[in-house]
Image 1: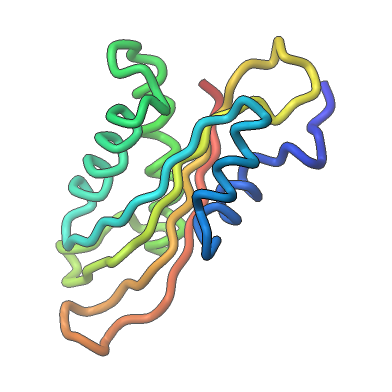
Image 2 (image 1 turned 90 degrees about the vertical axis):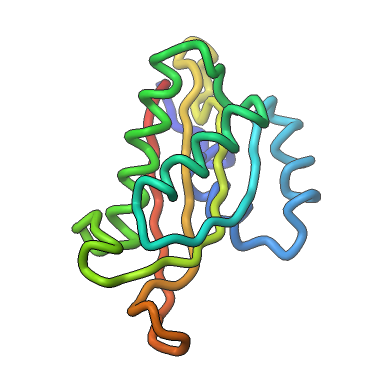
Length: 147
């Protein structure tokens, strides 16, 4: 059960997120039989961030909407990424903070052995701060989970 160096899902999710050309990155990942999507979300409510990413993942067939374990894995992956964005306290609006984030969702098998199955990664990058223009700073978060 070796984790393949060229198939590190977290690294690829971050590269996809920060890429100037996500279409080119996605084409490379499709050669590994991986699925990915990038999008943007901004809110003072953590549940809106979760909902936006879940909706995008289902709509773009990264996960199967009717399979609970896939939605459950994605949910925990998003929360893990939000922990990075919010420095361990998944609170935004309740502490008068807002986020403007780009996100990448990536699904694939990072192992040499196909029997290990798919994993999912969510990468978030953007700004967090008081809901006043110019009162924010950069932030990043990454979550990885098995499906």
